[in-house]
Amino acid sequence: MSKALAIPVPVFKLYGETGAWPTPDLIHCESIPERSQLHGWEIKPHRHSDLVQLLYVQAGQASLKVEDVVNHVDSSSLQVVPALSVHTFTFSEDVQGYVLSLAQPLAEQLGDLLNSPVLTTAACYSIGTERPYLDTLFSTLAREYNQQQSGRDAMLQSLITVLSVWLSRQKQASLLARTEQPDRGREYVQAFTRTLESRFREHLPIEHYAATLGISTAHLNALCRRLSGHSALQMINQRLLLEAKRDLVYTTMTIGQVSDTLGFSDPAYFSRFFKRGTGQSPKQFRVQR
Image (cartoon, rainbow, N blue to C red; front, side, top):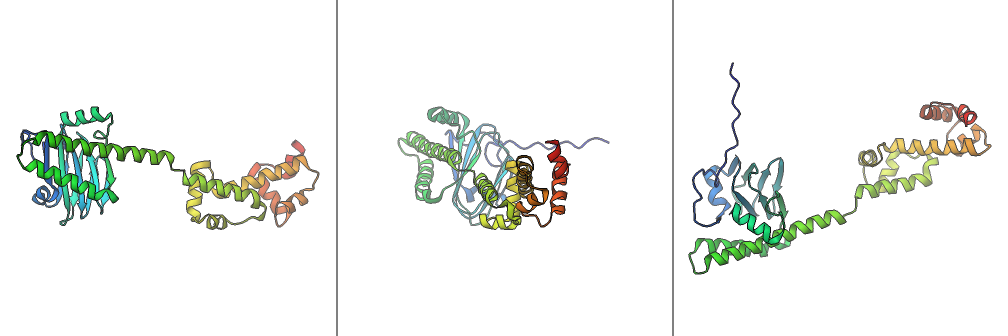
């Protein structure tokens, strides 16, 4: 029995086109509906060997998959699709926006100019309050592309450079935000640890600590495991064991008194808890130390 041949991902010059670059320009600009409606609003998996695409979704909805990352877009967004990236797009029928394709030599020239890999890294940028600016920029690009006026090449080059600078700034802002943003999970665990330090003798349930932090018990446990390697309950028990060991080694309190000090209901329960955590009874631990 012969093995089934793997179907390679098609390599297109543009959507569904394997022919030569359609214009003498290093730029191609068209609306999203213009191309997508011809393919039932779905662009199947493919890649481009020698061009970068910028997909500007102004309105409507879209599912944008580049390699293994999927962005579900329902507000204005700009997707960067580097050369050779396998990608597939699905659009709602009311989608509005533009597809800007840049030949690889132009993309490399822009990267050198900005000293930024912004066109070689897949990313999806939310536009937000920048939409009027991007709307104007893309509509001007489309108008300039479709009209043969004097200075057209210089104008297109200038507009593409402006767009590339905008993208570079967005990338820098995103990197800075990730650098400066505090680890919220770490803050939660630190707050939990501080509260535990003052109240571990009360044997409070995990739910109480989680509610104090304003998160769920499952979330608190997940954060504790990620940052400390132990569940929240294990951290509570370890704190109780640490204090029990201190009392047994550095004080003359009886085991019953240690049990009372640590909030246990009876010494027998405390002894079982201690042995389960250390492998020794409180008495054995004290004698050994």
